[in-house]
Structure formats: structure tokens, C-alpha cells
Length: 131
Image (tube, rainbow, N blue to C red; front, side, top):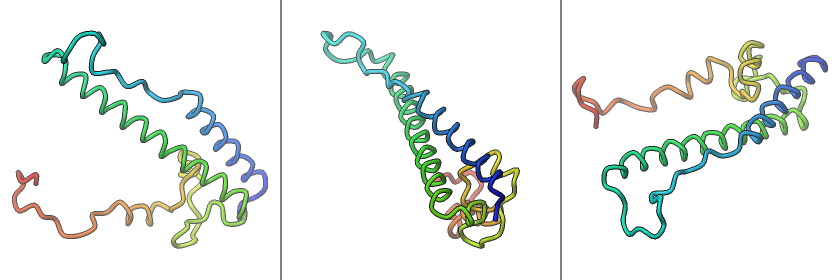
């Protein structure tokens, strides 16, 4: 169990992260057409515009996911302060350095490595097979 001062430090880090995410807002997604009166799009600009839209959309989704993790961590901190800082899978302590960098971390490094590992045999037959 973490000390009350450590829990408060975690809470402050989480609240600061929440505030940072909310203050930055969403990344604007550039429209496909600059001139709404013009029919169609400029074929030369279309790929760049589409790429910018995809990047902005992924960035917004990623920030939304991070905000959800921060909110879940704040909820865990409020509801079960004695369990905060323990891995939700193995219940071993999460390293203080990991919690400092990712205050919303739920898993220790070992369990996170297991989560991130490939989930089955590779379907690649050759080094250059990208399917």
C-alpha cells in the first residue's frame, strides 16, 4: 500500500495530465475542400489532405484513449486507494519510475510485456511477406 503522501502525488500527476489533455483540445481535421462553392477536389492536394485527416483523427483518438485511462486511474485511486500502484493482474507493485512516467499504468512491466506480445504464431513465411 502506498503512503498517503505518495497517493496524493499520484492524484496530482493524474489531475495535471487530465488538465493538459483537456486544455489542448482536439486537433482540427482539415476539410477536403477549401472552397465550399467549388465542385470536386484538387487531385494533387487530395492525398495530402487525406493523410492530414487520418493523422489528426488518430491523434484525437489517442488523446481520448489516454484521457479514459487517466479517468479510470482517478476512479481506482478514489475507490481502492490501497490497491493503487499494484498491478491489476499479478498484484505486485508497479515500479515508482513507471508510475511517475505513466501515472495511469495498471500493469507492471512484466504483465504489460505479456499484453504487448504477439497473440499467436506469425503468418509471415518470408522476411518480405507483409500480409
